[in-house]
Image 1 (cartoon, rainbow, N blue to C red):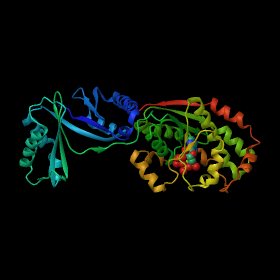
Image 2: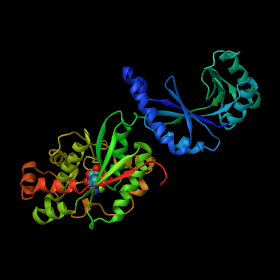
Image 3: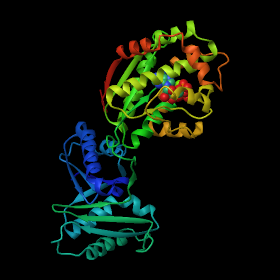
Image 4: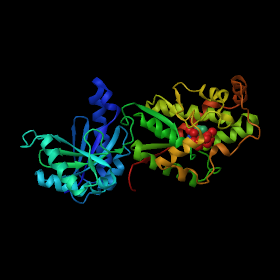
Length: 393
Ligand code: ATP
Ligand code: MG
């Protein structure tokens, strides 16, 4: 008999009247993520999703790993199934919980019966299974008030399940519940993390990448698509919009004062991202900006760049230390790829002495020589869309 997974909902349970909507979205996202891993039966009972594989061939380690990355799931519990006789439940508990029992100082058994016609009460089952465990692991004391380990027994319609402590899930809210945002995705360390953080709040993400061929190479673009691929484990499928950015950059280089290169370039990025948002009904932009990290991330500089947007600019990393961002990047699995040394368009024409406290009227004057609307339209018209699905190629 195969193990099953119990997915415990997090914040969704606080959603009151909207709860059904969030729950349906979660079930839909879970089903999508499971589609490539085999056939499953999914049941939702009292804020827990039960994921039962329909065949022995399913790789439950892979399923467990995938489910810890679904936003909206607070905890993932792996449980072993057995026949629902007291003897079978006790034997399964002794076998399945052996390592945890040996490691724990004390334990108790807690039983839930979904099958109310079962001839033993929950307390009787707990006592029976607890007795077998106490006998098999005499060094682990029974403690019903403050046990180090709780062994759970669930008696369901057709079988029983045994499980121990849950694994942490990804938390957050199901992707899609919170609308859509456009995320500016570079190949750096920060923007994959900012994308992850806003997706975690239930937002579907559209990554936009600015590509300055031949100043930035095909490899640099592929790196961004590979980062997006890692992110789909959390964010679900995404379509990356690759924006041709070379013409804008050479125009800025040829016609604008050097000290404003970066700021003017960033204002173009924001205008184009706003354009992508408009086309897709997205209601916010997301960046990996972080206060004080570089010259273009002072409060004055951020003010100059967001002045060209109509939707809010979300900057989830604004108050993080680099070390905190790196820790998160490692945890979600993007760090190594992010540190591959490919150039980014931001570093192509970097001014030697950038303005750290720019005035917006001065920036506007410096960019006024450019055909702003024409350049933005040209970039938007030249976008290449690349669809990225979770899972293997
Ligand atoms: P990151 O590590 O995310 O690249 P960074 O610390 O290098 O960030 P900048 O290069 O100033 O900072 O970029 C700030 C933000 O602008 C990035 O976090 C990202 O959201 C966006 N950005 C920068 N370059 C690009 C690009 N080529 N394509 C899309 N977005 C970009
Ligand atoms: Mg960067």
